[in-house]
Image (cartoon, rainbow, N blue to C red; front, side):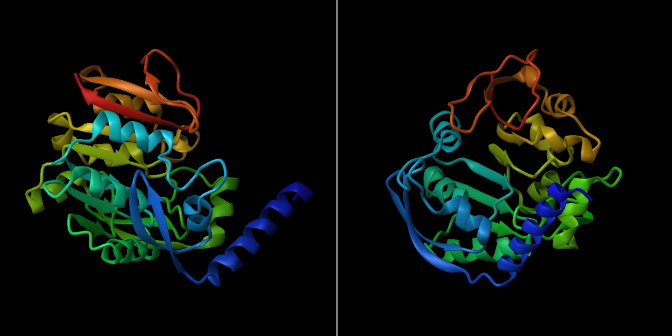
Length: 276
């Protein structure tokens, strides 16, 4: 093992120890004119949700600002796959209003419990948090037990996979979005998907929903799709991109722009789509 690799693993182990001894705490967080009580549940949450000089607490980032402006309407029913601690869920709940609904799916038990607490803290009544993975079918799936939890890769072991094994693995319940919608008699109007390379499997489980051309926001984790034996092209085919007007956010600090399907996607991006 090279010195560089050893140092990387040492940093990962130190972070793991800090995470294991981390004590959640509550802050008040203001954004888009909305104020929330919010529990920070771990080191990643502390890094992502505590404001910085470059990202003031009152500002929407480019992703969420575009989502609010172009895709969301009062009364929308949103399936959010990848809820984490529920920060974006809180914003979505306010934007869809009392006539709307948000269902947040979160694979990690710890994250789901924090998200539920954050909904309760703010008396949010139009959100349901489901501690489930979303995929192509119902059953069990194995995940890495870390803050930005992901389904374990299908293909051969990689160094990235070994690094993540530091956190351990856990079997969790998986449901398809189609099954969930049918069981609850819900028809989502927007799918928001951020599932760490598992995007294609989620879309395979939403074939019936996709027939109704819901609005879409998908974070495409291009660099790790191969671990799940899939590709950007499969994702575009699953949603039938020809039915949509699409925008793409190439950089988190830049606004989304119109997407040309002929342009190759080589890095992680956010794809936004509304039916034509």
